[in-house]
Amino acid sequence: MTLHLPTPDSPLKIGTRGSPLALAQAHETRRRLSAAFDLPEEAFEIVVIKTTGDDASLIAKDRPLKELGGKGLFTKEIEEDLLSGAIDIAVHSMKDMPVAQPEGLLLDTYLPREDTRDAFVSPDVARLADLPEGAVVGTSSLRRRAQLLHFRPDLKVVEFRGNVQTRLKKLEDKVADCTFLAMAGLNRLGMSHVASSAIEPEEMLPAVAQGAIGIERRADDMRTAEMLAALHDTPTGHRLAAERAFLAALDGSCETPIAGLSELEGGTIRLRGQVLRPDGSEAIGDDRTAPVEDAAKLGREIAQHLLSLAGPDFFSWRG
Image 1 (cartoon, one colour):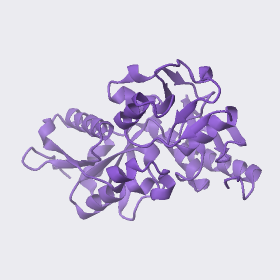
Image 2 (cartoon, one colour):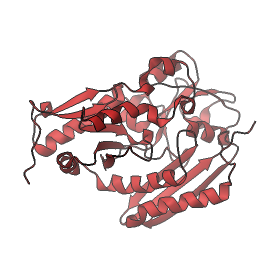
Image 3 (cartoon, rainbow, N blue to C red):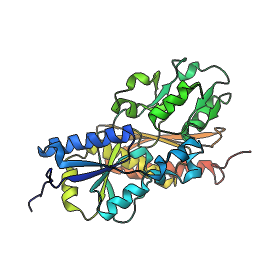
Image 4 (tube, rainbow, N blue to C red):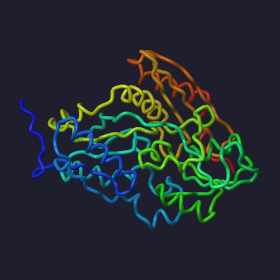
């Protein structure tokens, strides 16, 4: 069967949110598609879609994400446009993606993974460990909040929502002494200099799938499936199979402090997983390896082990 490639007159439409980072990821996808098929970039049209999560009035309220509807806030409208045919593919930050996709959609293409570490950002302090007692930390991540309070209960954590630029402006306005961003996002924006330092996973295990870009498509769109196959990075696929299986088995969402990171060495995959009480009072972790073909099984096994240790009320807030 002949693959009918897109043209500038009939482009493949790439759906994305409109933040600078989302656009950078969409442009990276377009460049890779253009190079893979020796097509002009005009054969791929970037379509900006405003999601509920991009509503400035919601961001301004600085309410926790879980109170606003969870990760689906950033995907609902994009996936609706994908299902309707208004766009052909959707580009996502994988750490923001729910573990299940709507019926009719598939998320099975990943670009090569970027730096997985968290970035510590402060105008006055070089490293997380150097924060003075009682310092104010701005973050909207329940994971980062719980991890911080676990080893530094003296810190004060305030809600800090918004894109990279919004959070940097809040830091400039002295709303907090420091904040955290993903090193991957800063690298993709050409802003790695913003990080005071990168936090090694031994100090703060990152979010599941952090640093990875995923491309979603319609399940019955075989032309797009064939084109995306040329972009898929197999090592990243193995790593996310382990991490997202871990997250799914924990019934993970934005309401649950969960961290996970997989790494490949030859034919072996290593997965470190962690769950925390939301107030940081307790953390439970595990670290195991398996053959790479058992990546998803490894994720499920670690999740089940942590659940057995945690007990049914582990994720409840303490008064």
